[in-house]
Length: 264
Image 1 (cartoon, rainbow, N blue to C red):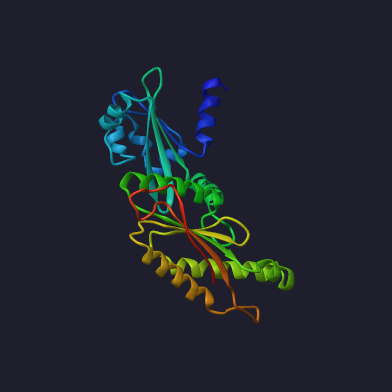
Image 2: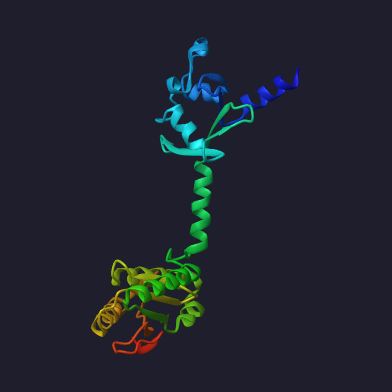
């Protein structure tokens, strides 16, 4: 078997869809996956070209125009909930290579990596890392447009006693319930994050006046005051809440001003 035949066999067994077109767009070669995917009749090989096979809703001339300024060009397309990425590039001998690969698993892996890096696995709230990035971005935005934002620092009182007395499973369920109640109490654009064991933060954006903070704090209080039932146990939870604002309602704004500290 010649080296060329070995390479052909390798390409034919490759899970990606691989095809080669001549510089004018005429069909030259395709592996079995490409042939099956695009319904190519090999008996018509001599009359086939890229625009007739039409693997994508773009013309061969369009692909060539994209490759004038770039070494490669890619397109992503969804096929029956499966995401494929097509890569086009020229060989040194001016053949156009088209490789289409299933990247669904890779994309799902990317999503999982992003999620675990930015979200808390227990409560599904944003984690400390995500919170810090969002805080920096929101502070910069507030500085640009002159708006005010506030930070709520929220701590569950005597949470260690719950863990020590009833176990971590009950404690975890309590944190999940508290997280849901916090989310149900804030405005759509506000951000709630879990930054520690029983520590939460709330970023409240576009604060017009102190009254908005008071209303939000009162809403949190009323929601958390509702008894929490876990595994036949009923808990009356209290929170310690500290609030800071990014600027004062005076002519001399400061980076942060401590607004109040309340015990719920």
